[in-house]
Amino acid sequence: MTSDVDSESHERHMNAFLVKFWREQIAEMETLEISSEQAFKTHNDLPLARIKRIMKSDEDVRMISAEAPVLFAKACELFILELTLRSWCYSEQSKRKTLQKEDITAAIHKTDNFDFLVDSVGRP
Image (cartoon, rainbow, N blue to C red; front, side, top):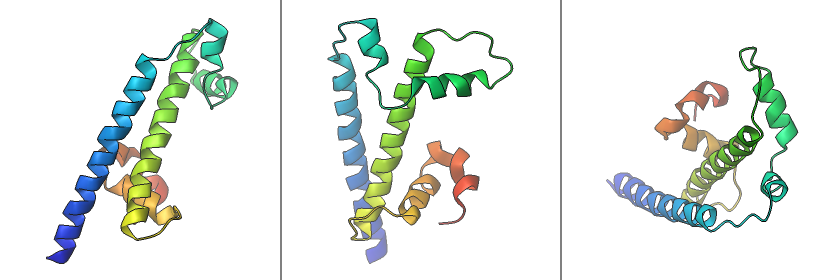
């Protein structure tokens, strides 16, 4: 019974974190002021050349617009941030301050949107 209560409390805590996270991300994107196209292209943490190379690795892709790698970079950044946030919640539930593989595995296995990664991480 206590385990169920703890699990429900953890779910509420994680959902509150996620709501706050997405509100902050939306607000940041809405207020983003980019002075030039070049500034927009360099406003991310992932290498655009590598993203473009991955996109081109699909033989069906012939041309890639300049905006596509930038949008993919932002999407990847948001994906990584959400997976990390969910994993961190499992780390906190285990009363640890260090993110471990088992936290990431738990986040992947307990989130429907991450089902495509289940085979990559194994069992929790």
